Length: 329
Image (cartoon, rainbow, N blue to C red; front, side, top):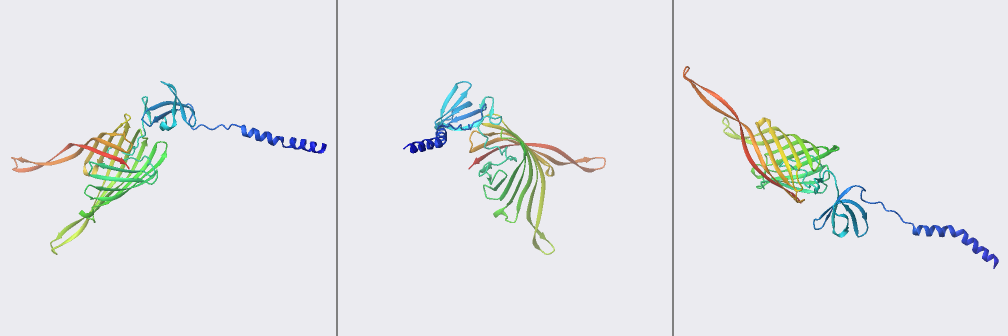
């Protein structure tokens, strides 16, 4: 009996560290890392559209505690919270939260080199006559289709975007289209390079490109009394500069300038792009067509009795209203 008691004593003493550790582990509290950034301002939007701006100071399974400047501490039930956004210079201005600009890639009709959103499909139309739709494979590449209301021309397109670091981006744009049923052997297109700087709140873009067209013309050969087809190519280069600046929660200012030196004309456009809805954005504005008009007149010289042809050149300005809409499908 004495040996049994001694054995049980040493057994308890030998296993006591295990029992103590087990008890310690069972009562140990693991401190979880907070998901929010301390000292930073957040915007919490509820399902009914109500916005709360302040610092997040607590969170549990049911509620989020936010410290606001005007209302103090407010508990918000998690099932009522639609979105949580960190306040930054891009989405906050003059004490007002600016929802994300889902249409940052467009000006009036021109586009920029800002990165795409993976898996997104966007359809853009001007005057509901011309249409272009692009699908973003990733942030760097988007492929698309273009056509008009009558189905000619019809073509394919490719856009790219690459970051240079910070808020600097470069990209390319390539399109080629056939005249389909009005002349399937005739085609046109363009290739351009872009540089963009900025973000979804303010950005600008400069672009240079070449437009080309190749059409089959029919000419009559008088010696053989036959028609023959001759392909004629016409290329021209162009330049563009565009700017966007968000002026309010629901609208942004857009400006564009196009110059086509070979054809002696240019376009200057100013307008507004709506940002209220994430799935649709309207663009309204005016383009001013500027071109050089050349006219000839005759001047009679009584002394010599001859007519002299005089060339007159003047710049013409033609205002053109514009509206377009971009859909996020």
